[in-house]
Image (cartoon, rainbow, N blue to C red):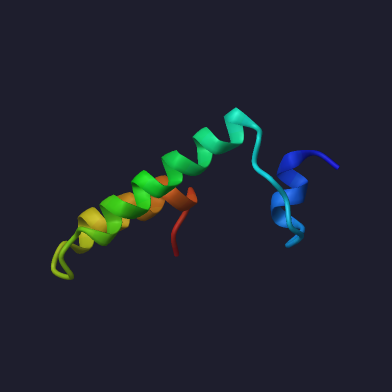
Length: 57
């Protein structure tokens, strides 16, 4: 089982894959940006969600 499959299998694993760790860090950066927006910044929040999820709605 490759590391990406292990990640989604809900089993315990050790993340020693540098590329996967890099992707997780990038995701955390985007989540941080989203969490720092104000509720009134709907357009900005939507743009960030699109970056994170690929599609919204």
